Image (cartoon, rainbow, N blue to C red; front, side, top):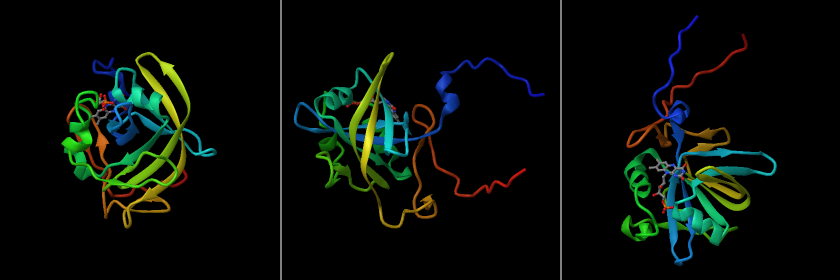
Length: 186
Ligand SMILES: Cc1cc2nc3c(=O)[nH]c(=O)nc-3n(C[C@H](O)[C@H](O)[C@H](O)COP(=O)(O)O)c2cc1C
């Protein structure tokens, strides 16, 4: 039998690394704001939904209350510096789009644009939310999903072409090892 010890770190690190997304929102100050979020998950397939845990203190929370739409952008592993930077300052203080020279692609179903260069972009509308402690868990109805040409097929990402960004802890990120593990029935 294996032996176990009480974990002394933050419990959730045992559930990391996690695929990081960048939430783009429209804010009361008229700007688009960008917030990386690794606490995100698909919720239901029908309707297509994605949930994101958003810190109550973040400007993004204020923006989502102001305008309940967002784009959910999947950055590439090459954007680690941008992602980390976006997650260490608040849109309350700075215009992150300007400071980091972020380009956009037009959305079709929501007002908020997607982030140019993302591996994938989902357009989402808030359909539900749940307040839990220090976060609000927003549930987005995904009304459109697009991917960057060449980086994915119907089974997901083509890691030979591009890699996703998995958040470990703090400044540490990982990529997916493209070597496949094929399961067989036992
Ligand atoms: C890789 C990474 C992942 C993060 N994940 C989340 C998350 O899932 N939820 C959250 O509320 N904040 C998360 N943060 C912190 C926010 O991005 C950070 O507080 C940000 O400055 C909030 O920006 P805003 O005030 O402009 O909304 C993350 C930060 C980083 C760097």
